Length: 535
Image 1 (cartoon, rainbow, N blue to C red):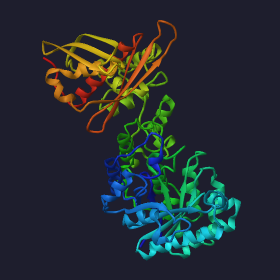
Image 2 (image 1 turned 180 degrees about the vertical axis):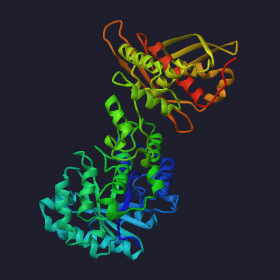
Image 3 (image 1 turned 90 degrees about the vertical axis):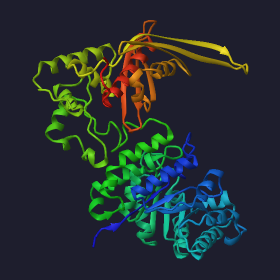
Image 4 (image 1 turned 60 degrees about the vertical axis):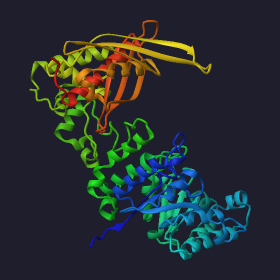
């Protein structure tokens, strides 16, 4: 039997995360995310607020059934002047019939007087009777103590009275909320240490916001002080600056002391290895590029650019890596740049599956070429697919799939049939595949989109390989000023396998630079998928 204490994970991506500016989950989005969280073995999944909006109401109507997680509905304690059994808002939450219910209530005397406009003792009764109603209906009740830390600082006796009322009424969890994200770790730890003297730690949770960039640190401080439920969102999604990032909390709790030796959570070792995939799935749902610098799971989280660093990492990875990248489903990246040394290139070659003698003169020539190209505006540390193509071409390992004879693109600004002023791009691309000349014409919502569509419209036998290729990001940087400015274009691509790659193009002409990056993206996809060489 384990001597470790159990710590429970509560995910609120579907409710708190949905409050992020620009995020609007569909019912299908919420279903995908919820199933992913359940497979990860999160203990509680908060689905939203039934009755608050049509989307949440429809989602709860699906009656989600999880293998591991406890489905939780969020709502508010009863209103003044209504009984717990006759409050429309509370009834909508309870009618969702989820196994657990989390009810938010005031714990700051200032808000009780100003926002609710009621007496302090009446607010305590609202909390107590609402929790008691959940207990009566056989639900697992939680009290979400809004603004608890501000309330405690202003009036510790009253904040504790609210928490104790929920506990005495039968709340399984009293969740202490740093609602405006303004508390610091030392404050969190000191206040929680006092609260556990009145409410047992195995009935306390922590919910932090990231307004001082301390949400994860504040959560860990609360855990150290005794709470045994921690709340967060995938990738720290949330209103304003976000919430505690559960993707960062999980590996810290499983891999770092004193947490890993004192506490256990429901995540398995296999679940830990899936974190990078889970993190990026959310970004896919939101149709946004992943944060390359996110702790543990970012594409740059284990990236080593300087030559001296690379040499040290090759001898002892722990020199610059605090955990093994594969433990969280990530990988080590050795970028190639003008700061690179021979060790960077050799390490990168191994990642590509290229076996080459480090003393081979080709390595020195390639290193010089990288530095010369970066002087001209290329940057391969963020475009490894283009670098791999360049290296393999020097070794004669990239087949000639097709030859681009020419391309043309034009942009026309005109009024459409409705009289609206619109811009339309047309592109023409001529290619030669197996001795056959093919010409494709396409329209797009911009020059790059039109060129991409035209290039892939008909590539003969290669079209089948490119069906799932998608361009997901396009970045432009002007490297020099003036009328002869040099432009760098970086394109991010993906396919149905979930693999992502970056390609680059540099030219005084933005369209030419874009087409070069497009060509590299298509060629890399064909090479990676083992397409046959042209005749």
